[in-house]
Length: 309
Image (cartoon, rainbow, N blue to C red):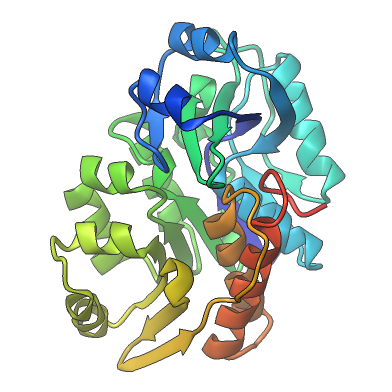
């Protein structure tokens, strides 16, 4: 198997809203907020659902990799309920091997409300459900050992059981990559993420805001120096400034694609990571991998949702 993803198994519920809805509900545009089931249902009750799809950040990347013809797998915790069954079916339909045997949990399968505003930005409200209760017993050690690259998401990291799951997975991996996931996520777990990036990850994916926050700077040159110093591959997306990869002393840049009809930014980072990893595991150069990542993210932002049909 080329790549195994471990992440939050979340069913995405996509809705269009106006900016007023974001401000009235005290949400911060373009970020992810964690809520309980009651608050989630209250928000959803006033909305029209555009689409429902098996989601989660790393799962989106893994599906993209599968669509590009790679043999991939995924581990994520769901309950044996209606949404859990839909989640599993959605992955299998995309030829992703699902390394998780679901059972009836006390807490239901996780759900993410993806709110798309007229400017195409997406704001996420997540009820983690049982996804956030992943533990070391949920990690298939043989699947981790058998993959070339293990791909983790920052969203999944939390003290307690998820941390133990992370540690077990990293311990048995051949090479490990992780996405920092979200600015709030970085700010919540900064010291732990910094330790992971410096000492345990081979590849880190981040956007510009996330990596600047991680190392407490507002100067992007500091990021380049930081990456060169730790001698790890750090891949950064910078919106309309394009993307770059810092690999040892080499800095490789790729410009953004222009004149795109942007509909929804959901999944842009996920599909970028999938495209980049596709290049990397198929022997492409860093530059070509950046180009493939940019191509994939350009496709996804021109449609609603995080899956290329």
